[in-house]
Image 1 (cartoon, one colour):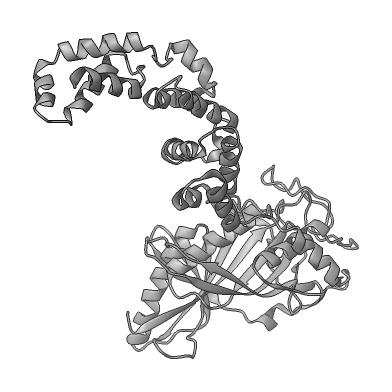
Image 2: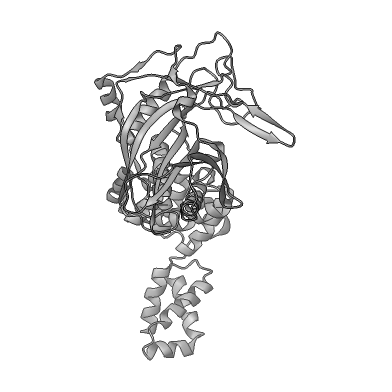
Amino acid sequence: MTEYEAVIGLEVHVEVKTASKMFCSCANDFGGEPNTRVCPVCMGYPGVLPVPNKKAIEQTVIAGLLTDCEIARFSKFDRKSYFYPDMPKNYQISQYDLPFCEHGRIKISGKGFSGEDIGDVTIGITRIHLEEDVGKLNHFPGYSGVDYNRAGVPLMEIVSEPDIRTPDEAYAYLNKLKQIMQYAGISDCDMEKGQMRCDVNVSVRKAGTEKFGTKIEIKNLNSFRAVHRSLEYEIWRQPEVLESGGALQQETRGWNDDRGETYLMRVKEAAHDYRYFPDPDLMPVTFSDEEIENFRKNLPELPEAMRERFIAGFGITDYDAEVLCQSKALALYFEKGAALIKTPKLLANWIISELLRELSDAGTDISGCRISPEQFAALIGLIENNTISGKIAKDVFGEMFKTGKDAQAIVKEKGLEQVTDTGAIETLVDEAVANNAQQVQQYKDGNAKVLQFFVGQVMKLSRGKANPQMVVQLLKQKLD
């Protein structure tokens, strides 16, 4: 409804990639048999003491610097009390009033989920705090079970300002945040493994007014697409309630992806319901200006910088760089291959047009590719030195993708070397001309497009192995 405006804020939980959990030495690995990666600390046994994971704290500070946050010189951990089966201690070690990072921002641009251009938008970051993750409930017919393997895994919560106005902006923000975390090596952000999860806060207000409406939280969103769809639904539902004379209350709603609608879960708790207080078992965490400056000097390269470097160093287009840098793994794959060949632009074309298509059809990403960057570079090298034509290269690439074999081995095995002998190609040209007198006359009458017909005939006679440039040159000599 156009007279209403949406006000959206996102709470994004990102599991930090570390060797061990946040406050104990249990392995921080996904999977495993239920309740096999637990110990007295993460199970909350009496008398145990937590020990903070230094790496997780450092990664949180890096995340803050990469999102232009202010880093706290003095911070502490707090206990957030609640009673639920997923947290065995009946409280969660988190941060309340003194988080590690505050007052940041992320700039987004480009297109959203729907394809609409969102322009250039800056989204504020309220805070980034560090806490421990909870266990995972599994529901079965007639009963439920809880797996505590995930309980105690370091978890960042990144809270945005209510600066987002559309589902497309929310989608772009999440993608940008995911890129930053992956490029920095802070998290793999695999949503299927629960490494990145999102809660949405959304309200509506009459356009042009300043006062916020009643905030509704949406939980159980397991994909960026679900975030986009749930926001579209709520931005429609809330004005409908108001216009029909109803009232909205602060509440938590779930998302039913099959039905495409939200549903009431519970009335929203307030902060005082959790009875936050400083954790007496954990000392405050302090940082000096020198320590923070050292973090700043060693920040990883982000997508924007890598795109600019690729454009300047490899001569690829803005579009090429944008596609290749969507994933850090794909960007590094291209970079390794591009360093080994004369024409990086050709490699970029092949990755974007051929490799990404094959990966999509196979339902995997670059991590599931059998072709190494070195093997791909070798294939491009065969094209560069005219050993094979571009058409033959596509057949070779298809075989490489299926088997992981080297391009040179496939070319030799199938006898696919390009014919560059002038005499051999001239014989094929003579045959094509002799067999197509009508087309010869059309060419002589001024129809230059017929030349492509003859190129096709020669390539057919050579089974695609004739050098196309030599074919065109010899045909022109004969026909002219």
